[in-house]
Amino acid sequence: MNDERDEGSFDQRLNQARERQGLAEPAATPTGEEVSSAWNLGARIGVELAAALVVGGIIGYALDRWLHTTPIFLLVFFVLGAAAGMLNVWRLISPPSQRPPGK
Amino acid sequence: MATLDPMEQFKLIPVFGNFGEQFHFSQANLMMIVASLLVLGLLRLGMAPKAVVPGRLQALAEISYQGVMSLAVESIGPEGKRFFPFVFTLFFFILFGNVLGLLPFIGYTFTSHIAVTFGLAITVFALATIAAIYIHGLHFFSYFLPEGTPWVLAPLMVVIEIISYLSRPLSLSIRLFANMMAGHVMVDVFAYFVILLGSAGAIGAVAAIFPMGINVVMIGFEFAIAFLQAYIFAALTCVYLHDAVHLH
Image (cartoon, rainbow over all chains, first blue to last red; front, side, top):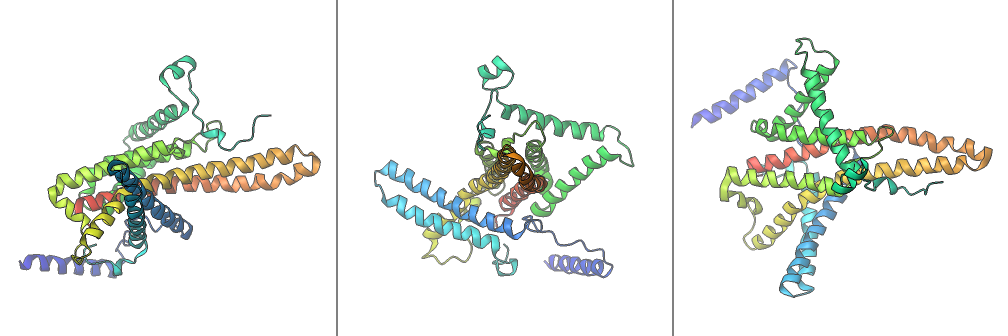
């Protein structure tokens, strides 16, 4: 069980050595954020908000059609969709340090 | 004079006369086949010399391979190699679709139709979900309950997480479709300004230079956007596959 820690510290030392030698590769950004400008980020946020809202609305509408409860589920899921949109946006713009560990 | 309708370009027109009408074979289908053949041709012809020092075409083919490979491996992890063929196909299909629409005499982009982009996004979504269930089994469903959620909020959070998860294919498809459609409409509108001003006498013809100049710049931007949107689509696919492989 010590192995893992040793491996981690070896990786760390390797990375430090590579940095000293100027060999370290720039940290990769998995979401392609390096290429997206502020304009792109704004457009993405708008799309994320709208998409979650639409999905919530569709689910609510479908449940209402199915259970004949118009408009209760539509209203509930519209709000939940808005919340999901906010969650999407939060995930998009939150800096990595503020994300819960393992994220 | 033909009607000046910027949405006219998105109409599907059957090609090859009677054959196209019988089989509903429109220019969209044709362009998809052309794009696929071009990608295949690029790789096939590019790698044919098998030179140690690559020529131009071979360098292009090698760079595209390495670029997508590093994207897949860096954002998915070592497992990314298994998904590399999918990401590569997706990226180049979209890229060629976007760029083909900017070439003269073609002017039709199949990625400007939400039916196409949503189809692609649903494929990504289905693959990511199936891969997640295949790898993690029923443990996959823990994805919808983030760690550390207070149990009072759990029912609410599960629903919100599910909606957030389901909104992925929609946001993925809307992003690509809206970017491509908006770009083509803008270029068209400015082109109509040129025609309208040009038909309004000598002063109009001089003034028509300005929308013309804007269009020149815009076509340049469109090429950048065509590449960027294909890249974003592939990168987000990798992010979703990363979530599928690692769950969070």
